[in-house]
Image (cartoon, rainbow, N blue to C red; front, side, top):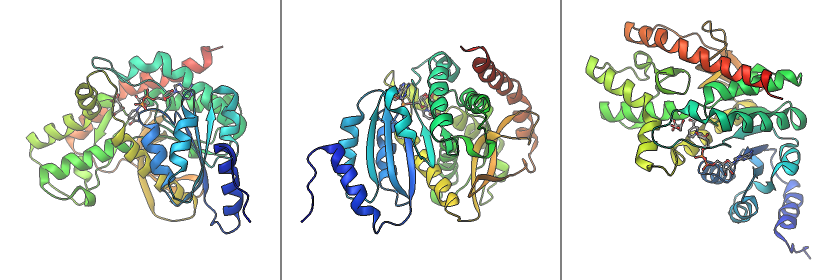
Length: 340
Ligand code: NAD
Ligand code: LMR
């Protein structure tokens, strides 16, 4: 006879025990900000991923409901919910991968940097939890402004003496996803086969699509380059304006984060040749953080690729973005050193 679970939380523990017997070794993923606009669809996509064996959903509101709901999907991963600060350490305990979309989104008229005041403190607190409970985890930061929140995370981990630059990522996959979509639309092909590298950072002009390195190679007119570059750089704002006050990209972001998480987990498992663009600690330019192509492996970043040949338009874009990106990085570093 089987023991029957009575309550939701017992139910997940029960299923974890019975499944552990025959389960293939999967990863433990913690999602912080799991009940928000990004968090909910991303929770679902992670629950569907066979590489995830345990999914911990953490938020300051609504985790019991979202966890109960998602836990009814008949996929392998076991889901557990954690509510508010006292449960943060339990949520993070033993995590292989921590994904952070916690924080407020933009409204029309705001820049991503306008979110710094609130989101900097949220990211700092959550990464302090990572330093304490799962210092070896890979950390993927979605919370804006990414250009500053990644340096914040690095400083917090450094302060705690557990910083591993190979395991900290700012998620810029949505820029690549948008670039692939918009390029495919202009060329008239299926976006599935298109891959556009996007370098720099994740805000306005710091988003630098490298159309000269698109795979497969396409050639664009000057007009097309201008249109595509502007549309990719302002893709986030396009969604913020269309949502007219109710938030920013959530569904496309959940898709992009699930795609990036899949690459990370496949690489952690030992698959070779996995390359993604991401915002990471880097020596590719004189800036301490920069998004370029990175090769992922069992320990996070295995290799950071150089910029490769840029055309004149891209060289100008690169020169233009550096001042803003530098300032955003310094603002993040400063925040950790001046915060109590
Ligand atoms: P949202 O407001 O819908 O959800 C945010 C969630 O974070 C909420 O559920 C909230 O309760 C939770 N939260 C707040 N403080 C928390 C804390 N201290 N600990 C845990 N959870 C906490 O917002 P959203 O649309 O999901 O966007 C989240 C963030 O992601 C925003 O900062 C947004 O700008 C950013 N974003 C980044 C990208 C990117 O490409 N990197 C794309 C889209 C959105
Ligand atoms: C995006 O690119 O969609 C996100 O960074 C959210 C935003 O504020 O634009």
